[in-house]
Image 1 (tube, rainbow, N blue to C red):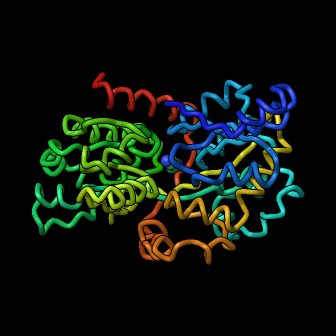
Image 2 (image 1 turned 90 degrees about the vertical axis):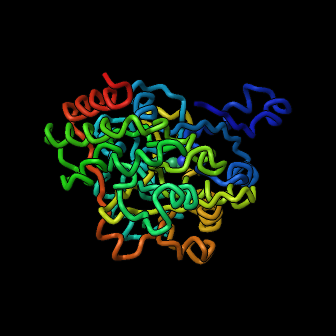
Length: 362
Ligand code: N2P
């Protein structure tokens, strides 16, 4: 999937393509991950035009980064992917003298991100969240009974349970490094294990429920949940809340909830970083600094329902969001969250192979 939003068109027409091109920042970010007015506000504040492309998979971003010459100035890898891409020399160190808004960031969360990028030398937290389950409360209650409490990965990993939901539509993320560990965790295994037998057991569990899964996709589920076209999605926190908000706005009777299952869930950080071969590193720093403006980050969180790591923005974030345990987990829930570690090349190949088998049955 690829969409392109550009604020550059008018300027290009007015100033002539060559001249304007020098002042165009190229951003590559996750889909459904920015406020409607963020880019325009950046252009208004700085005169810098933005070309904005989106993806919904770390693997897609990684392939582009490793190939080089992507033309992008700012990209947003998830922390574990960031770590091994840094090791591959993909990102330039940040010039922190150009990022005065770093002072707004939450030191504890930045320390968490430093586990992947010592000293936070290469990246700044954009948003963070969890990988849990979004579901249509009525459709699930109709099939599993009013008394069924949705609080466990059993909803999607227990064949008896998920088979009863197949008719209303169950989806999973097309994200092998998140789905296989979630299945391993449900089996009582360490989600970060790189033991071949553990990874195979996780994949085998997903293969077992595969007949009841309508699709594996990492962005389609937002509108499908919102419209009632599917009823359960393993998905990312903010995306599920966006589905909920869309259903509320449409007043279509669909009620969506998000749960961090009691067995635990992955907590991740998505990181703003500058490719080593970025054509416009100076503009990239300006953009990253702009994003760390408390109002700008608060606007994004208020629009995409993802937690941010900008302490100064918190008073500007809608209290409905800061008080939601699905977005800002309680201390008790935090104890059950795990952070992922990057796979070595061998494990990565195994996981890719297992995932192909999960999706295609081969
Ligand atoms: C936004 C998805 C971002 C979360 N649609 C993935 N790390």
